[in-house]
Image 1 (cartoon, chains in turn yellow, blue):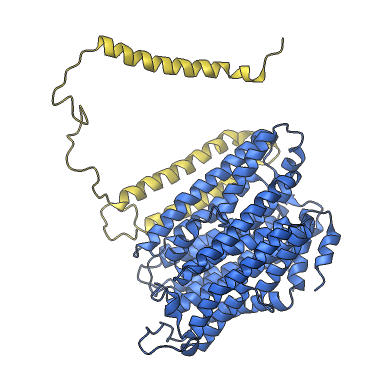
Image 2 (image 1 turned 90 degrees about the horizontal axis):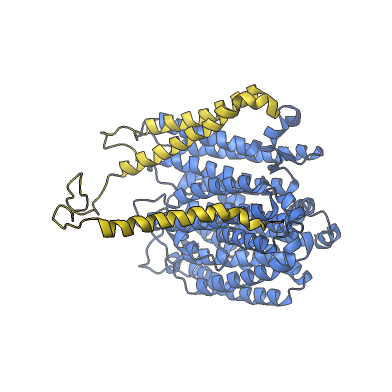
Length: 134
Length: 506
């Protein structure tokens, strides 16, 4: 019996149906079973946690964005090293020497180190210095 | 003295030597910039960048030695060294060198982030160079991103002024949207053919059996590339970005990334989808006509010189794309030649505009240029020369660029395209002449004095001289460049060399 190509996506379709069904089930169930009380605390933005105050459209220091950006950069750079570490021992069986792999990562880390040196010298990581060269 | 680089280093490394040289230069600039105390002027880093670019240019020429080898690709078939890639490497390194020379004398002294400026230009050059030699779509994408991200940042370099961030944000948002299209195209083509290597795609286009997917891929990739060359209808960003970015940066980004993107367009169309030529020829016909007409009509209405030149660059993208209507590799030859001619005259024009308008664009309007010829005859004369070349009058590079482009389109049977192109050239002459007349008019007593009284620097004079020399050589003796372009085209598409020979009678 020949099965059409698209049938192999059947589990995916079932998964999607189940996920949507579960969501609907939870909403409907809480509508019928749950109790509803509207008090001042319940209507707040954060029911527990910090008290909301002021306007959300305030001004933030550009430093927040710099730090967030640097985190992403170094995070991704770190992620790149994981496949290298996994494959390193198998390199000879893949047709290139381990020394080649070693020098490749040295070049790579060299670039990362240059970037780190640059941002440190430019004072991006000095949280208290307001005269940093942003 | 010839250095035998071929036996001095691994072949793979030699294939990306210009990019390696530029990368090391950029990293060096960053290191020195970070090590120097903040108050020291970073101008000398610009000379370092220029030196690195010269070495990269020499390295590109040295790559000719690689052509002795039977193997054309390296790094597991991802980069190719051919006369085609070397042609564009030399062109891009030349443009970057001229841009750096302009920036050396026109950036304000002790400017903010000056070191970064030079580093970003060299890093951008890495991406542009790699874009012309990459033959695997993922490497192409990475190269495209390296070049784009550098230009996004450079576009917003004047961040104190409101227009700079506006230009950067517009360019960044629309640009990343366009690269998204391109990436989606790569995914589609991989889905349809199971490969991302350009030459393999060409052989599998027929056997793949997913014609819908292939067409979708072609369309998506065209959107991405046509955005980068600012062809209509993907041109909306151009005037705003050119107006907001500093003029030396505009000199770079109106030419070098475009040259790289045209190289990519040629590679994708003729390298990956030659079988679909009956489909993409009419598409590009339409894009060429739209770009020429929209660009020229809009340029007629401009009062700002940089905006006018931005619309003119859209029109020039149209003239260039007209060459793709030509048959076989004559189209490639004409397109390559046009890229070189356009780059030399446009870089020159923006160099003069930088000097006359000033770094902060103190005198941006066409009427502000009144009487420049009387105040500084050298600058006025140079700008008139570049504008004449942009019109396409003989003895300048612009003339032969247009001539070859329209001749090949005619040879490909696109008579209407050529007619529309010629009409557009006439239309374009009107607004170029408006600026020329303004330059040549006698200055009025009370009109503002252009800030060009100070002596013109050595570096920017050298840049102007290089641009003038290139435009003149391309206009008087185009044979050598045309021969190199034809060789590159022949290597890309080995059939129909005789058609190119019919073009090379100069």
